[in-house]
Figure 1 (cartoon, rainbow, N blue to C red):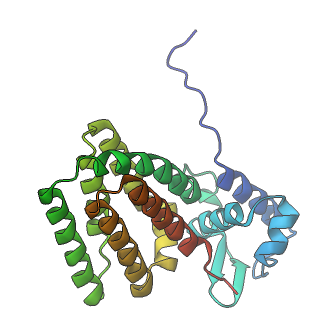
Figure 2 (tube, rainbow, N blue to C red):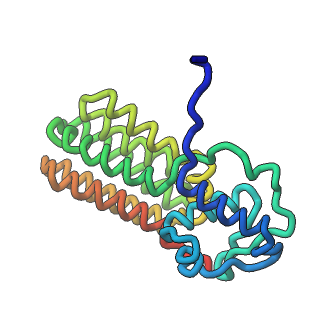
Figure 3 (cartoon, rainbow, N blue to C red):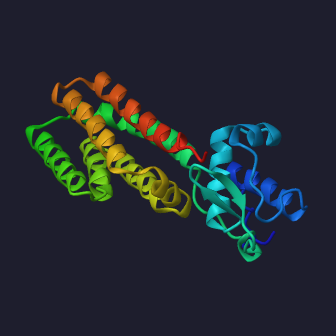
Length: 233
């Protein structure tokens, strides 16, 4: 057997859904300039969940097949770039990433809460204060958001878990996640995220591992809902 042959990477669900919609475009069921059915209707037609459909639409927007017009709808572009239709992955499913982060960071914060020190709390407080300053000055504190989560992960005492937390967070720079961020991140959503970070900090300060875990899960769930709930029309 030729050991150089590698198994093909399975198509992610959002890629499969995007392929279905591209098929409708290629088959003429969706013509250039046409507005796609409402998300709920299209999801039912394709037999997928709305979150999976939403990720597929973001992928189609990135490759130029559709245009998402907030408050109006989603339209087939006049000249979709067919050269990009068979391009490689645009990143992991943001929905699956948030599920993975909740699983990993929920476990990590239990370990960190058992190792709380004054220096650790001081470091977290500095990060939160810097985040507040960035938000007040209308800047997106993505690096500080990462630092907050990594500071907690490093406090767990498990370098492997800390590495995983960093890798999962850095997936936010993939084309899929970056495109979604441009749609849902606002000063208001960052203010909400900061408030959720503050509840996590308070639980750690109280040395309450289960409360800290609950608040971490709540924060990541709220983060997921923020991008899932934007309205195209």
